[in-house]
Image 1 (cartoon, rainbow, N blue to C red):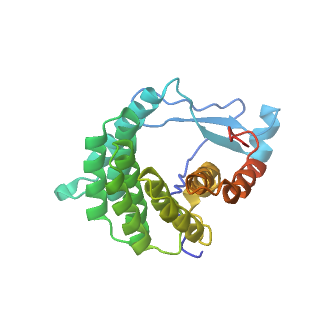
Image 2 (cartoon, rainbow, N blue to C red; image 1 turned 30 degrees about the vertical axis):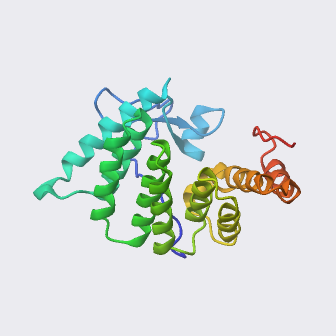
Length: 240
């Protein structure tokens, strides 16, 4: 309701509420979910609680990437009337290409998404996507530029500040890393971060803590390490 729920896609499915119904994707259908009853007794679950839709697992990242890429290609072909680019499809394609390590092609798709998008919320996500690709390619300067551009679009959201903080850390600019981390933690998270808390808690705090250590003041980073550790104790965070 406040305009900050980004990158969550709800899909409507029409299914028969039959006993023992399980939906598996037929080859080439583009459907890649499992449909299973909610609850231990299938008969009761189907008629009382409904069903749960979840993504069908694949064995490797490469398989998942290829599957997503094929689906996106088919979707993009359906909306290509007049040569127009659907920004969301270009973004999804970029994500699939990034998983394959094809960073040049992913970057080209993200540029298309940015140019074709019609609102700042989408541009914000697409620029952060381009920043991620730039980091993967070792182009920290481009990552920094894209993350700063995202801040300019939606300064009330925290994720871009954390990406700027990380870019400054990788550039050896410790004070700037800490500055943008502190600025970011006063902002609002995106839905992407709520779905993936590592983006919001552990990683940003680790970079800021290490930046404090590089400045010769490791004690200032200790509370950040413990803050992350207490929230996510099962993550591999070094208490030292």
